[in-house]
Length: 253
Image 1: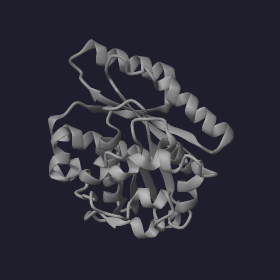
Image 2: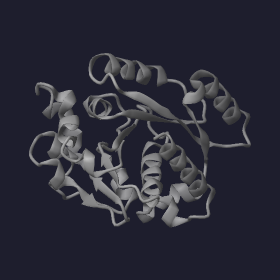
Image 3: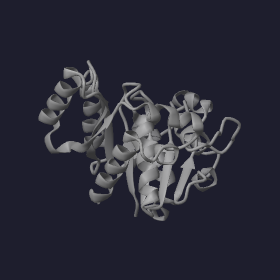
């Protein structure tokens, strides 16, 4: 049975999709079978591996509303061992479409039962919100990975996410664990970045990944070429650090 990791933070611009795509790609590069589920209407995870599902009628949206079996929504990414269930803008209507559906928090988990055994890892890229899509991700997951940028207000709003996680643990998914906090957009030249690292490590202790992801131009460029950083520029510091982070994830079990 594969491990399901939700990559979540309701704050936008913290590196959720960058982390999802690049950790998934490096884990797949180690020979593990990996699936990315893009549950963000912005659909950037798909673009990050070269998949454009704008016109597709077999996306995670159709899975959630029961129009398509999950297996039919799986697409090859073009990278060995890495598949994708894409998203598109139609997913933005899911909140309304699922409003009156009984057990709506469990839809993704139930859908995934048919395919979990076929993958070693499933990474779910969440939207920057705490609505029904993120809730479905947390209920379906074994653990949650929290990207956190090394900037002012980094911890702002994190308490809200932690409350949601605690609520899910208490009522919907008792086995949900915190995989770890990923520190992103680190700039060693600033005292602020160093202070954020210190504060987060003090607060979360062993739940912070050792690998810190720096600000890196090559990381920012890679998605526009439809490639994970390991394919775009394997020698860049962004590639080296995400490869190290993927190794940490694998060692977690």
